Image (cartoon, rainbow, N blue to C red; front, side, top):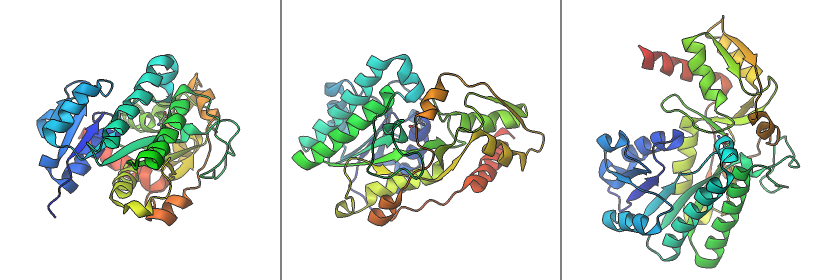
Length: 316
Ligand code: AKB
């Protein structure tokens, strides 16, 4: 079906961006999806690409006008662990980047925005099991604080300026095509690479640190799904709880052993343990299901089997 949408993905070479761009290009066509990042990447060989610094509002506007962009997926951000190392820059990037893009929609230069939030909006006082959509938040990381403030800005721009902004609170994302960077949930990707490479993994979280996670195909389906849903179905304009499945390092190691029986895991918790301890263990995503039909496909066993099959194929 021909489309009038022109999509700019900002921060396209990260873990989510890499796969999202591939999927958006197959849905909307190569000529309608512009990948962009702070520096040139190999994505430039596969389709349209621009170097964009989201903090440079004038430069961003130039690219938007050049391509007649109608929708922006804003993925550029520092994640939880990296943000703790550079809190002021994390705040600047995560917040002012968002405001620059929201302002473009306020001025009606673009029509629609996707902006990711995270389970990091929740904090140590949040109920940990089946965390409700609306509950105590009080995040204790700079990343979580920036995501919570970002959610407030999104809702504010929707209410005040009718900006069509849509958002999901991602759990940890697991995929085989691209590497994660700077997150607390990254171990759940590293563990597969190490299991296949050396048969063992030293985990930076303790064995019973249960966290909500999601396999990348489900994350992509949810992201494109919320953006394609009719506007009147999007009842929450801060951000939707999103859930796949939850597990601890011990549980995923057990699952990996169903495929690699000799796999061993050891535990050496570092500063990321404190971040993990402040987050929920499972998420109630029922509002996403009710409002715009969200339903995950993968569970821990299905994800593990698919990861191992694909990573083995990638190596050979
Ligand atoms: C992180 O660990 O920082 C991210 C997230 C849960 O938002 N993966």
